[in-house]
Length: 158
Ligand SMILES: CC(C)(COP(=O)(O)OP(=O)(O)OC[C@H]1O[C@@H](n2cnc3c(N)ncnc32)[C@H](O)[C@@H]1OP(=O)(O)O)[C@@H](O)C(=O)NCCC(=O)NCCS
Image (cartoon, rainbow, N blue to C red):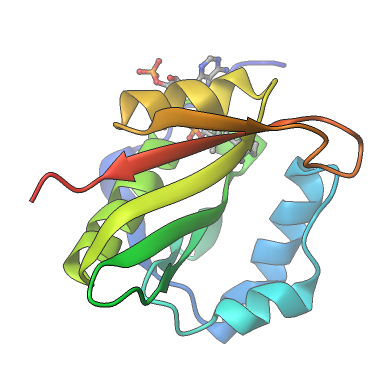
């Protein structure tokens, strides 16, 4: 793939996703994933504090979806989806979205955050490990096409 044009990441705003973002989010989802979520799944996450978008002057460049499960005051977070527009990748936007989602979850009182990633998705795996997620276990045939998932976990140090 040709290198992405450089984007001024400083000018990228990360903010909560809103209903008018959903069409662009879903369009991007279908571009980057072989097994994309349906529109209605994104709708269900509206209002989650860590459902965030990266916005450059009204253009949606990426999104992250994360939520929180209560657990007797030691809540768990779950990063469920992360994507950046292929034309905007390699500009630090994926890292920015991931960091903001993690911070948001920690502010909400989460002590541990997990995610699943395709075993062969070395780009995403590299990013997650750089950001402090540690591989915990492997789930064979987790995806419909038979690929295994790796479960990665981030522990709050507070
Ligand atoms: C994974 C993804 C979100 C990364 O977004 P991005 O904006 O391109 O990532 P960044 O520019 O913030 O890069 C962060 C790190 O990711 C890794 N990375 C990103 N692109 C890479 C590439 N082409 N090759 C190798 N590593 C890469 C590197 O570790 C990079 O850090 P570095 O620049 O210091 O080497 C993006 O590639 C994407 O949308 N992929 C398709 C959807 C997907 O796989 N989502 C994750 C599902 S679990």
